[in-house]
Image (cartoon, rainbow, N blue to C red; front, side, top):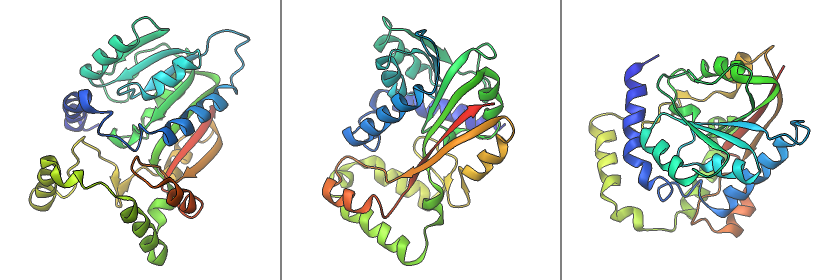
Length: 268
């Protein structure tokens, strides 16, 4: 484990916690939120609890994106994150709900009892974890037999395999959708450009690690890691919707391109 990456992750997310929602329009928009809620509702139904509450873990909870949906679906939620600032926000938002928070103090360690969780949700998290394959050992430990692991919002196999003319068409679609000129008024965007140009070409404002062509989340490696411990129920890809996109143009292209993926696994 690279301890400096873990500490940097905490620092970066403490800084962005109060403005996280406003800075992530690719997550907090009606299209993506409906897709996510629909998936969670569908896959929670795979768990047979005989009218008992489903105990869920939102790993890398952030501002409570999954937590909010899971609570609305009448689950018990343990929301875990590395950022004390995010944990404070979650405690304020959900203090009177079926909710507990958990501060992650060591990478790839989850301070809950073995075989105590029915459902784990991991949304837009793996690319922040230095050794992202190792965390699957902990997921396996804390899940009950037949428990469900839902990994979502990481760049898809199709995204990394884009090449030639199709890659040009995809980039044209992305450029066409960027209608807002507000990004030109944000000083942080120029600071980011300067750092990537002259200091660190892999700099990311929120400390993302595995988001590069030569270092990214590899779904096939995940499948190999979980072999004989999890059943891969499904792997699906979708075209991410970002607020500001023209929905008509987006709908025309969502069957043509897939840039994000999710995987559903069941503990054997």
